[in-house]
Length: 537
Image (cartoon, rainbow, N blue to C red; front, side, top):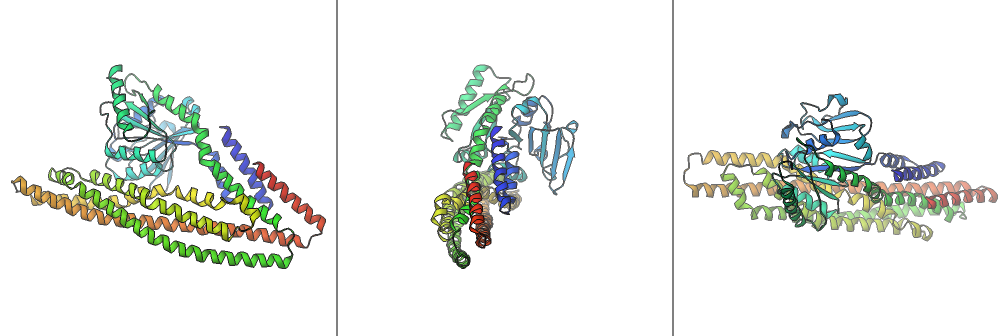
């Protein structure tokens, strides 16, 4: 993809300029590596046993993935074009290497394996070389490790493929919630109807209309792309291949969306450095020392202001946690009858409760936390621009420097809070709920009157709701506070980075003070040339 080469070349130009001035190139090096390894991540999502793995095998024409799996052995698997290598990322941090001939890998479990990564030299994969397909476990597998694996991709993917089986053309709550979440982020969604061989063309059209109608009620999209495929018996996967080829065609646009502003931000940071040197070229040594002292005072004042802003934000975060906890409780209380019915019938209540909690947390994060986070970051960015980058010559060119570096990148991490928070509480909730349901069954084993059983089931449901609300509130609170710590650490890192660059600029200007005018002018001319090169990038 040409844009990958173009961006990598621009970043290498930037890196060369940074090296000229002995600046740290670590972040630029990491950026180059990320750009050169860019692929559109396209997770295959759906419920368990909808034929996702069989579909991918049919696309490749080779059995890379096991189709004889249970919920315990369904491991996330990435597939993309490359040399024929297979890597198994184990839960203990080790990486085991396998050959293509070893596929499909057997006896893997979600407890011992986090991910399998398959690079395969195949003609169709070469056609979609900038796409990484991810075969994810079923959303309804009932294993929390699966939820965590799925959640890992949701914030980072750029296109999604939803598989719905023709023999069960419905969207369960867990899928509906994910589709809603994707719509919030304006993510491309493709729908594949699997297991279509037993249906006539008329019946397939009816299923397409049915599924399109269901999805159109969830998302505001009148042009939902749906295809029907069959990966068993008489194989037909042309529809999904067309979708993947379309994602490949869109990969350049998705690449630009992901990296354009980030590249500009990286260049502006260097631009600030060069402009600062040009603007201070005529200052004396004593004036430069005054500038350095003023910079240090500005930084100290800024840190004090940020501390006060942080304390205000911490109070707001507490209010958010309380509001989200209340939302969880309200939604669970509304579902008391449904939970009690599941308890009374001896059914698993974990899925119902986790769906309610996840939905409540997602809505709470979006409505309560993210707006406050955005405002907090903008306030911090404005403080940095006003207090540190005060020179008008610099401000005109980098007025969005801090916003680009922090708000855009940091705010993108807000979505995983939802997922991490739910993941953090799901294990304890399952244990507690299981114990309560077991105690209910023991207590009514000899009770024959249905009204007594109903009453006891409601009491158990109310107890579950109380316990889950408390644990969910603690889990969400811990995750939000941990996230805020990370955000503040990023902010401090950004302030120090900008201070170090301005300090380095002052050092360079001081070193030129003693030079003869002719040499000084040569140095300034060189800086101006580098500045023009940056602006050309």
